Length: 573
Image (cartoon, rainbow, N blue to C red):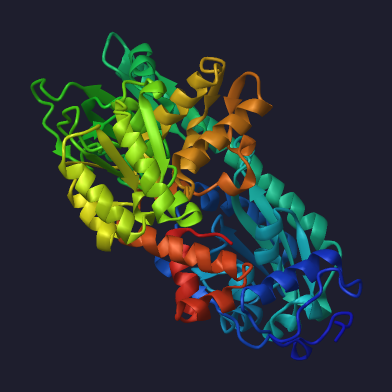
């Protein structure tokens, strides 16, 4: 049924899809209703989450907003308005200004410190929709998606950092519909700009503190010194020589939240850790916040064998892509791994890079041409005594062919190499074949060896003849590290080739990557269990077209549980 102008939420049900092109609603409101419905919300059933422990009332945003909101309070006087401030996660920080009766009504609907106002939790409203659209939005009475909010009108405006352009929060004015006024739009926009200007002033002060700390630490020293802040990197020549840009990602993760430790004028605590850089070198690093409440962190690197450089080891040892094995020419080898993990490249390395020394048979041909024809090809290939006889995708062989091949492995002849699925996935005769190979090489999926991404990308750029002219920035590499890589190295090579074909020189930034590869870097630090959970939820959402209600049913969990896990794993869909 068509959606009437400013409709009552009672007319909407999960079975009736909101048409985002409906002309009876303003386009931005119609699209917001559609997104709210796709998330599984119904107008009578909000899915509000409250996270009071996550609220930071001493953040730079809160400090910058305080005098601006106080001025708003003077301008509004005793009028029935409330001012709300939300952080970059669209979480209510505070409701510092507002008439008591109106504040009580809003609090009764979950508008409290820690309340998460996203379209998937509270539907269409000026905080959630401004957060989604990244621009100012007014939502009047019946335009709210949730029935309980239709008694209000609200005006929201995003607050963006003037330097980084990152969304910092949303400022909102809410009133009863009878007190609605178009003058609230310029009022809230001006207040948001004032907060942004104060954020800029704070940023300049913090940058001065970071520069001073860097100059003191680097003066007269040859050891590497680095300062990382929000949008700021200060590095000594030794640090530039030592560190790859992707190492900055690991260092930022290592120091996450350190800047919020310590208060007042108390000395900032320092920590010492042992880190393994992308080059494979392990160093001791001493790091501490530049000042209380800032994102700037100072890093000083030392050789761990130096006196006083005792450190606590963090993380696991670097894992090679190929497990080392003792290979003697003639010893049967099984190379296992998912498609695209580099099985063919590994075969070439065994032949010394000389493809002319390799004779290959594809096991899948046995199903197409028949077992007898394939076995005849095998006999002819073996009699020709090639330097390397390769059987690709050995797990696809019919049992009769697998038995014959196993006998060939047991007698002197050509050097035979089998490639196929990961060892843990083999069953039946294919598992027996792999077990008959004294040497086994297991190739990890790319998503399980993301620490190698910088080196792999450099090698691929070098193969394309553009290394030195093109460089992937740390943010771009961090996004790639969060991708699932179902196509493994083959997919990565396609991506690098595609991106290199569009740029002749310069930096490859996050925005230069195809949209599907702009993934949150959170995934690279997940445990194996979290990663499996991340993959299952992402797959369900993709197969359900982004409909969270259907995805939750497919996964066998409640919608609330799905939202909680999506938030914990930073899945956006």
